Image (spheres, rainbow, N blue to C red):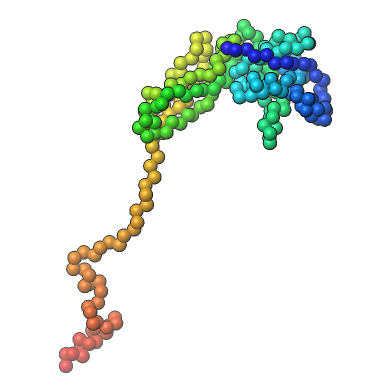
Length: 228
């Protein structure tokens, strides 16, 4: 994979005010550490960090450039970025030193390619995972893992075990799980207007009093008075 360079300098542990001044000067406070590296406070270029590690922080391999001999030419990955809540600016970074000869575990984004058959049939493509953890040598970390969804029908899934990985790269997790599926079409039925049930033939007269009949009970009285 491509290796990028970032300017890095040692720094002393500072107060909040000094850290703010460091950021205003275009530098990001960071901590460099590793399996055999004691945590070391450093400062790195905010512009370079944003350009090289802003969107895909977990898998980008970075080579440090520094006037300090103990930092120069070290290879690191960004383990974590802290951002300002309102602006999204990077305000702190955790850098993990790696050994180019030892395999590491990193998260790599998935890129879904093709047009699923289930989508052609009206379904909805539903990614279930946006990235997966893989294990490989630092220089063999892929930028992305492509997932061809073309053969997927409605309700079909692609499992992580079905992904085509580059040579010498394997999934870090032991269990199998789905990464993408196609949901069935969503159909919204139009509401049906309520209609009164038509009375059966012959029921109309029974349901309403005969023409000319009086109020309830009045018809019976009129009949009885006519018997005399």
